[in-house]
Amino acid sequence: MIRYLEAGESHGKGLVAIIEGLPAGISIDIAFINQQLARRQGGHGRGGRMKIEKDKVEVLTGVRNGKTLGSPVTLMIHNKDWANWEQIMAAEEGAAIDQKRVTLPRPGHADLTGGIKYGHQDLRNILERASARETAIRVAVGALAQSVLRQFGVELWSHVVSIGSVEALPDYTKLNDALYDTPVYCTDEEAERDMIKIIDEAKEQGDTLGGVAEVVVLGLPLGIGTYVHYDRKLDGRLAQAVMSIQAFKGVEIGMGFQAAQVPGSQAHDEIFYEAGRGFYHKTNRCGGLEGSMTNGEPVVIRGAMKPIPTLYQPLRSADFVTHAEGLASVERSDACAVPAAAIVMQNAVAWTVLESMLEKFGGDNWQEVKRNYDSYLDAVKAAMQ
Ligand code: EPS
Image (cartoon, rainbow, N blue to C red):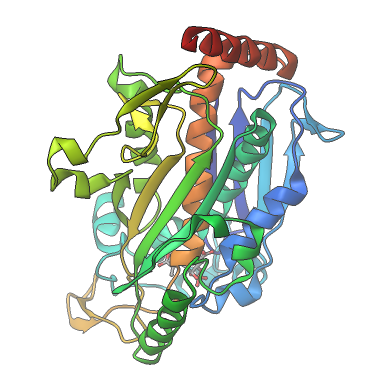
């Protein structure tokens, strides 16, 4: 029911998205979108590009006087770095095309396979689109989704649960705005100190670090998603959303992989009933999803990010054109982007949740959606009695 297409190169003019299917009359919080964009740029371990950019969204179409019109919404983020790349990245034919040519593919990046598959001689044509710069526009789209979800009373939070070998003991009472003023968006102060230390060490050695981020979705009613068909299962959709973020190699919901190691008696959430309250659980091992549907508990999802493949101390590679031995290309990189990736994940999850919400409660305008939503909540309440 809602969909979007986004485009843009890392050093091109900017990144754009066209979102289609949003009901009319939804309040759009542009300041909130910009806040999410600023958080994506943050985190200890970010590199030089973030000193150049100050990402701000421009709403080109589909919103008037703070509210959606029901027509496609177009978002744009301008790349400030474009000023330094205008000739090299120009759409027109030009002499600057061979400046900044890339021929030494980075192990772990899209460079080599992309070059062969798309038939390019200059691997810049691959890295420009494969770059994690693209996540800026995904955050803008997801932040718009978050601003809609807040009107349903749904909130999302993200935090870092590990970086390299340092694991945090999460404190869920610290999931609030103040967390994003801290260096690594981690709720465990002792782990935070160790994380900063290993990021600094990795940076000194020209190396990079990955980690695990977690997103918590609060306030979702039960019954979002469905068990009936593979492509509408919410857990499957969430996994796709997370795995499509650059450098993500794993995803877990609730206990995740740990559930595979314990007997069934320790893997499930027993059901209780109390008059007035209805059915409830005392645990949330399933991460708020049973039968691919929300069960009314917080949705908890984790994503594992591998270390960024652009290393200042480059790995061995072979030249794409001459086949000569060499070291992988490096222009600029981040020693660690896990805090930023947590924000990307939060917004990727938000879009997918909104998609499933509007599939169930959709309408042409917000009043219609809200009526559908409220009457469903009444029906759920009645079914609990
Ligand atoms: C990024 C922008 C990129 C990198 C980084 C993330 O900008 P540039 O290529 O100009 O330095 O800083 O992406 C990667 C290291 C990568 O391998 O994709 C951003 O906006 O998040």
